[in-house]
Length: 93
Image (cartoon, rainbow, N blue to C red; front, side, top):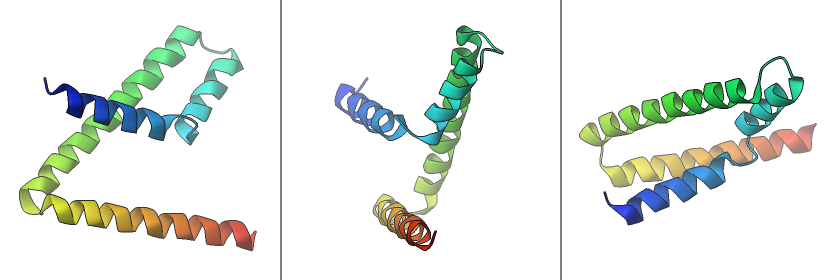
């Protein structure tokens, strides 16, 4: 296993997920008390594994047809556009 790549992906995804809407939803389910903490943990973990798997499959498929540099540029532009849109909506509210 390529440990530097592993740690880069792990830290990046961990930092991206902390405090996002998925984690907040998971906290709400755990706090609700209708399910055990273990049930919430297992369900949320499996959901994140499936979502990550879909991302890996989609990324691998894109890499066959597109230059990875172009995918990075497109992703960066998409993040900037979404960030700008969110800021504009926040100021309009």
